[in-house]
Length: 202
Image (cartoon, rainbow, N blue to C red; front, top):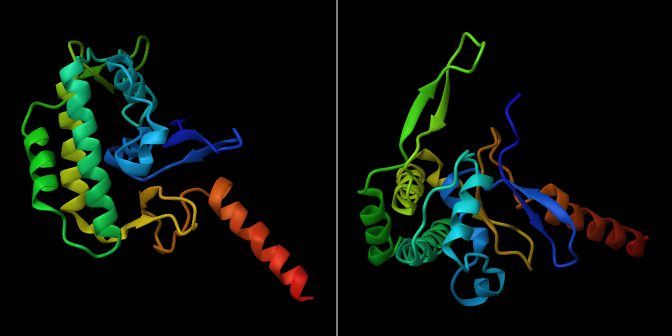
């Protein structure tokens, strides 16, 4: 059985909930960012980026070697992706400098992959190869961004409908009516508020 995609985040109250932004590149955003997102920063050291990779939908089995320079590049890419995602969600054209950051990062070689036959099995599975670096990781993330922003799901990039949530996701559902970052978090809070409002009216 395939593991669930998405990240486990924590509310300000410390309650864990699953957030699936629908794309690898958008999974990088909850690690922090510019402006008001700085208070969520978790990429303090190079190893933090490697740990993020292991918890992302990449499911890397061995942590890539990340340098301080690559960590700085990750934050630059993340900032560009934040702006591009929000601009796309509100129908604004992406800023040329942000597109340039994504394109430059995507131009490098991605994470190496290889086919392995599990012991005693008859099938094959894909695994990230050895020797992965932070640059490989960032190229893989940027290439995912190229696929997302240049593909049919770009028009489904949205910001959570909750007034106090800025998480961004791509709606990959068939009907295309997803409003919340997570039904466990913002969707449930909306239901509770709506119920209270109806009771007050009654």
